[in-house]
Image (tube, rainbow, N blue to C red; front, side, top):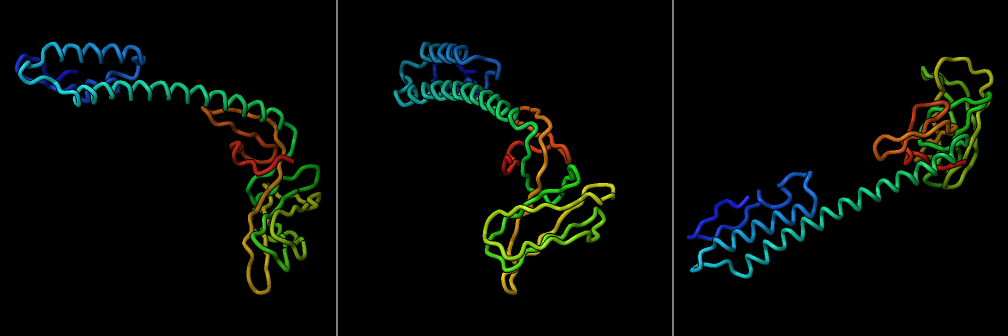
Length: 219
């Protein structure tokens, strides 16, 4: 509000009287009306010997323009966010029943098989996949031989796997005596989708739910 209105001095409208401090519930139009009333009252009661100069008026008019613009921008962003979430839901619905690839070294077993992939940061002379039990015991080793930079898939025969819990895998990739950095990826089946606020979640058959942006590829 106006800090003081009298006939002897000119008091600029304080930050507490700007529309941003008038309450989040006020509409942009209400904010403009309140601001203009305060400004008119200040002009009527200013000291004739010390009137508000053009710079002051321009500054205070700019405040309402800025806040009004921000309010409209916020509404536009909210609308765009809602539309984006709806588009994600439509895309997500088409993923149900399909396999997706997520960043993880935990394997999901389906029909006696477990599928995964690795991303190699460089060429490798030798690539091995070590399949481990939940307790860390070595169950099997898959040799992929020499592989080039990029993504490579693999499949593990899990029909004899009887342990409780999902197995994991470790990648050992080398070029000469140097280790090659890798990223582990797992394959799982989409069983459903859900939303939490503006975030879409993907429900998977063999693991915990992941966010939509965690999906690396649709298979």
